[in-house]
Image (cartoon, chains in turn cyan, purple):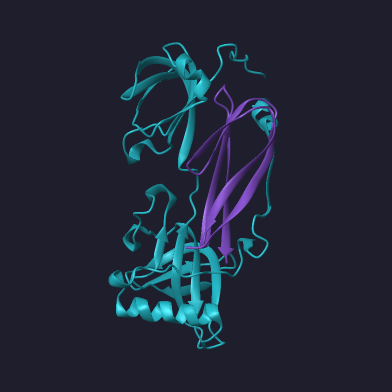
Length: 230
Length: 67
């Protein structure tokens, strides 16, 4: 494992491309509304959007503000969600049809019903003059990345259909290939044959469905496994 | 929808595979600088790196972008 610690010596998020924008590492207090096409908006959603617009443009009630909370979902229903914060306190948010739900493992299809108690979440909300909070966006923070890297030697390859590798644990893993599966680097594509060492990028959670590869990275033939160090 | 671009900067000691959310990169040894687009509101950055032996490390960051 020494090698992997040496592998990645630094991750740093640096400045912004646009000088006028702000990127705030959580926990911080920012939120912006998502604008939904008019024909899909409910009256409540439009009211929420108008309130947000007023707050954004500084034309509305100066006591309205955008806030951000991070914690663990302790309870929820179709109309509200309660977070337990790190200090043990609780904060409850109203949910509307316009509340955006982001769950990385579900892509853009997530809905309120996909939220569950115990999940860590970041909630961005609009706080009105009496302190009531309306959630604009709920982001579920995953415990592990959605994608995993699996390394092995190709034992079967059906271009555009499937690829099977034997991983270092000795097990065989088969991945489905689609037209969107990337093969990197392009100049090694002709080396993708049985016997090649590859890294497959695919969903980490096998239980969620088939293993469809989003990427295949081909390692040069000169790279060989290094004996494990003690 | 507004968005902003930031950069993930780092260093790898050997050739490595890096994913940032859905984006896949094959990195040569040395420093790297990779762009990431943030959407309005909260964003989760899932960063995974691995070597050709299958060793893997990951980092999950949450960031909030306000135009």
